[in-house]
Length: 175
Image (cartoon, rainbow, N blue to C red; front, top):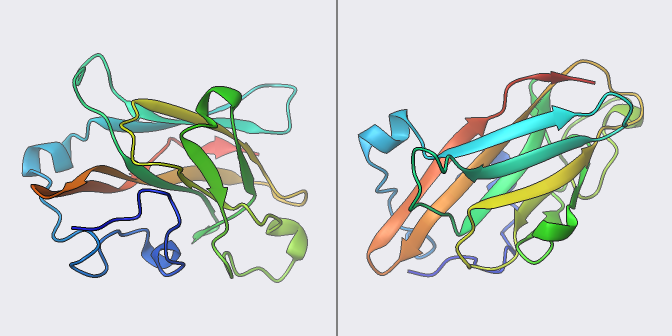
């Protein structure tokens, strides 16, 4: 099986955030029903009172799943029923593992002030196993309302098969 370990994903993955569009990329998802119902991965978002950005973290629930990690991810902000708002910047301690990614034509907005950003997604930079990565997310200048962060996490993609988790979401946060 061949994946996109460098994070240079095909643009089509932005549409539904599902890896493995072709069998040669990821094959079938072999996630267990137990893991699908209770995933080992979390996405959290924190807004500091006086800041114009949100800290977004993708990681393993280490207390319950101490021996798990992930190799790939695709993270986006979702608001008003659309993904791809704002822009991301990796935190210093995560720069070796994640990088900004531009999902072209997302989101569709009538007011450009509600959509700004050409780094509207965050992806893995390499296939190394990760347990925790963090980024700053900056909302568009005219955006207000509820935001959630949505991530697809690829735990494994090798000759033994592929396991990924789709549509993991943070709790809502208001901007």
